[in-house]
Image (cartoon, rainbow over all chains, first blue to last red; front, side, top):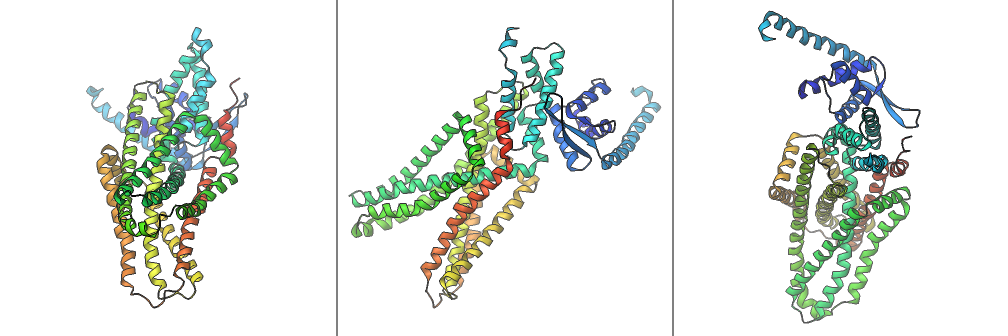
Length: 112
Length: 426
């Protein structure tokens, strides 16, 4: 299980990564993260929405209400150009952290 | 399986929705978004073999309790939250003012009647103070019972008032203006005569001054007590929901109204009591100035109102900036005063004294420094302008702002839609 702090720190990057695959809504975002992480990464569900709204305010993503077949509406989020740029920068940073850790652990195999 | 037939999903979701809608931090569209999530989650859990009731409970638990989501939403919708609070503050100002005026209409003539009797002036002063607070407590109790027990009627009434605001506005404005002439007429009717007036009026005036101070202390004590009690209740219910205990509907409703009550009382204490103090202080200085420069009573009256309003607007703008800007110091102070209501009360009282003697005092000093002027002409005309100016601000401007903000905050179309609830799931 990934710690709360790390989950919080990675939320925007995860959201941007999933939205770069295509437009999506909140519930599906959570499902996707669970699926890809094999259940190791768990979001407290309701907490995702304030983050999404904050990202919208920061103009990283867009949102629109779309009607479903049963007449109810669902809010879809879409990544903006700003968001893609942000994702690129985040990608480099996370990769840097990742490769640093991997290299460190390679030299000291006793740790793992 | 028995449970399955008895459990009404739409009713349960409606209850859940109502709870979330009551939070100022969540806009209607936020609640709608969470509801689609809840229904998606229920559907997925049902597919895994859970009963309808189990699926609903698990889904709402996973989504999180209102008390836990509120602060997070509040960070994004901060502006929205404060407008909501201003609405309740203005409502509180109007409500408590109306209660106060009604009480004066009853107690004023009674005091006059008592002055004509052999009763001692000290007794009259004491009883009039007691009667005023008894009437206030009674009105607050009736209001509390009504809103916490007749929730549906309150919601319907509120939506009707917001959809057709003209009639309620006229009614409030009329009440705000009508009480003074009515009181004057009743006081004249019950006038105790010259001899009793001369004998007892000075003692009663002294009583009025002291009970006025005591009354302010009581209002501030009520505010700090209610705020602290609300905070405790909120903490307790957050703890409860974390431990997955379901809180009852009545308890949630009480909590919501306690929070609104805090803002209503806060509105009355801060806007009402503080503002009237600022107004009176400015008035003293302006009237002194009028002795030097009173070309025409009406012109000066108009000028005086403009000055008063500009000062009030500046005062309110400063307060607005102070409260909407996030500040860790302010958060720390408010948290401390919630935990220690006695400290909160002392802080509030000190703030009041600082305002009264600092802000108000500087104007009084200004009035003191201006020497008495040669002209006393049109003094009453200027006073009348100022009285009407204050009444206009209180009865018309605040009421109009209240309705405007409330309608903006809760779009009326949306309100009826949310009252009826969305189409049930097919």
